[in-house]
Length: 146
Image (cartoon, rainbow, N blue to C red; front, top):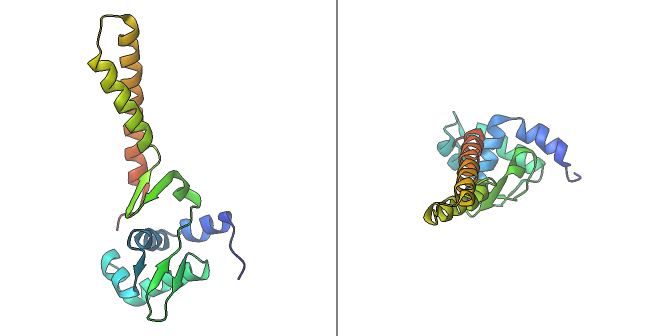
């Protein structure tokens, strides 16, 4: 099978809640079996987990090993483009704005001379921090829970 394009992956995998949950679980664990997926995601049977794993296998997102375990292939598509994967963590890209605005806000508040520039900069950086935190929390809520 030819490698599926991003739009097809987004429609077939990203549009199916449980398949996306299985893929996210696989991204975190790297290697797993259908029984482990079934237990962790609280599916009714290992065959349901097997169905989703085989679907991911058909689209080249996991490979099946000889012992029945599956190994994930990391790929960004659809909503996953908004996240950065680091080891077992899947983090919204907006976390970097939280860090930057947090440092700026802390710096301006620590340097609080009575200049209007520092007051204005503190307000702007605190506003940026609030928006970045709000957006990051929203992105976390979009991810399916295991």
